Image: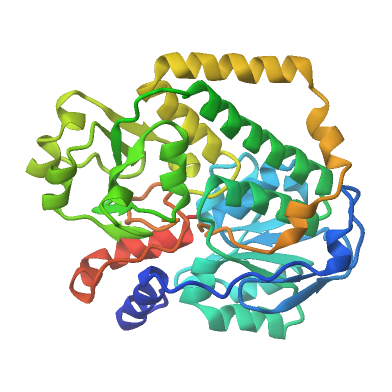
Length: 387
């Protein structure tokens, strides 16, 4: 994913080979006991196995991928962010922040020049350019690399952790609890519902098992055909499998073309007009707005269940409007549990060159070979950077 094609292909192999990142370790025991009222210093062990001590409440945060930026915005902490990637400009006010993207990936000089107290990095970026992350660490900058998020629960946990590390504990707990409550309401609303087969499609790839996009779909009442066909991670999907699966619904991010090959055109989804197009920053970024992607799918596939879901959300807000804040005063065990990523998801944060300001998924996408790699380099590079 660097400046030359050979390096780009190596990065593709790294980011999409399905090799797991180092498991994120538990946060320091003293941090685990902190309440929603953050105290510092706090020590975390990130996805690279590096212990990172954040000595004071960070006032200058750089996010190197859009999902981390979105998380900070959702925590009400955008004023603390001084640098973002070029793919985070969909966020209000992001264009006023420093741009840390360069022609070949992360612009180390730009990051250093912003004098950050903390840099949040997706695992996909680390896999693609570990030397640049080490340059930042060599400059005595606190850098936390997140693991790839593989479910909406993992995304909620990451929201708590980001809140903890950035001094926004209460907001992190509250926003994470909102996500978990919405997931529970969808499950309740879908009780007894039949679940049709769905397929996520973006530039010839699909989201298999072990991806947060798969969880977005199943949470909303779809079966993930790619996962049921034993595809894992973000993988290329062939035309024969598309025909065999015959999905009833196809889910596409808005920066990707709706597939129109003979195989896709033969599916029930296309023939019946059941193609659900969702904003990329909701579908492909492991961040709080991923819940809105599930809501959009739920409304399209199960309109009656969606109405029930909205009713449950309204009732919950009416009955206990203060409950998330009350929960936030308790210990932030989930937030302190690990420093896993974001890949960012850090999921298919990668996709093809489209010219869209929003972009793709953020996660590690395994499953394609060298021959396909040449055709997919452009898609993969953007996919890894836009989450």
